[in-house]
Length: 566
Ligand code: N01
Image 1 (cartoon, rainbow, N blue to C red):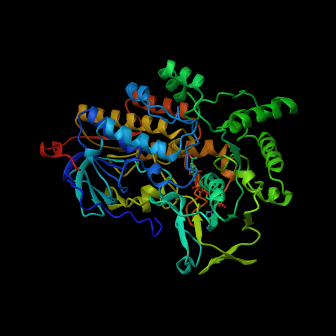
Image 2 (image 1 turned 90 degrees about the vertical axis):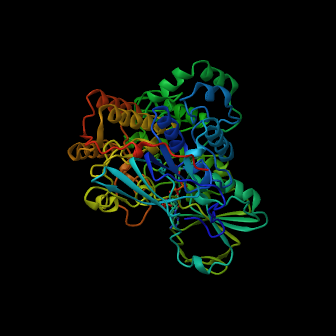
Image 3 (image 1 turned 60 degrees about the vertical axis):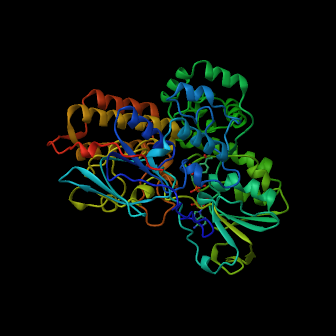
């Protein structure tokens, strides 16, 4: 949901030719959508894409709030499919900023000439499977209707911002914005009284920058988060040279890791198997190194309560050491869930920002927000005046963007209905009852627990291989076998339950959206194991998938390549 100053008007003047039939419709032109277009072109299938934003970039188009940057190192958060692309692109910082990542997405779109098959400023509002013809019928908010043999959703996992859930917003006479749909034109913060609601990654990244610009900043915190210093800076030239010397090996190691990026400092030991001194030294090394290594320096931090408590206590001490006012430090210390079970944040000066005289922290568990008023925010304690309210309140993650597509499968069943008790999917790639639909980074794939660029490339490669197999063997239809899907869901849940992750009220669990089923939405068995599993399924002749041979319905016309759009 965009803020009211942020509506991106359709660029109606642009030339826009949407074909009526196509091999593949790809929804979304972020990193997944772009790569999908490149791959489908490679195997000679026609593809057409829709993108709600006016340009490519997906999450990196929308999340342009101050301080937005990636929390995966730039050298890893890059496509690996093209050696030329790797050779020609240079990242300036260890963790790239949103503008730099958006330029990268634009560079890729230009370099591989990907825009001509994408209609921008166009949102898919519904897609229905026509069983008789084995076609998806896709409709958009601009009145397009297109029929395709395959439908690929590349809609992102964190792309549907949660609506602000606080009463009275319509009365507010100042300005309000959301981090997840930040306006393109500059938002005037200088000299303003600013509120930030939310202290997840988006809040934690933006708060230090907003504090520098605003006259006064008030942070409304519901649940404190664990954050580690990013130690950002220029890309280390020695490390870059090492990676570039053998990029294929670097990429191979990424795929063989648990999260799509191997830890460079993991000990492989339980935190409880070493002395207290060694444990502290391990945590300290991870703290100084940055990235998510505090979670992985010992191998049981998110599975063993004792090890977890040791990591938590280490961060608690760090917070106390940075934040000068002990009462504020105690408010910032997370206690209500195990360390790392809500997504760990990487920050630059987050905790130190609370040492500023012009920054205030309001614990809304102690003094809840009652409503937004004409002039600001009223808690149970008092009313705070504001010129600008920033909602850093997160997303309807993973399932939200898929449900928003209004998908209708076999027998006219809607995805919303099929998923009313939680998402069901085979490998996060296919859904029983929704033939020829492929979901990139769908629920029950490793997705949000990994370096997304790795997961994206892996999923698109797998999908394109599967579709290539269907083309070669004249198969008209594929869907997940229901029993295989149930077995996969069981396995995913069993692994999640063996960790501490299910103990937190996190967005991974759907707990941040009122009424959302409580299900751990990602495969946490490791990216390496997941990749192996996907490969084994292919080797075994696509176990768990049901194919239907072509009844000769594919016509030449259906396969025609469209005249380019835009
Ligand atoms: O969202 P979040 P986010 N009233 O859900 C609070 C990725 N990401 O946009 O914890 C008051 O984490 C909520 O409180 P609580 C990354 O994967 C990556 O920050 O629900 N408060 C929480 O504090 C990340 O995990 C990058 O009690 C409300 C905050 O708002 C994911 O996106 C950068 C509220 C929301 O935190 C989401 O991060 C940014 C309400 N009604 C994001 N509703 C990088 O790559 C929610 N909150 C660096």
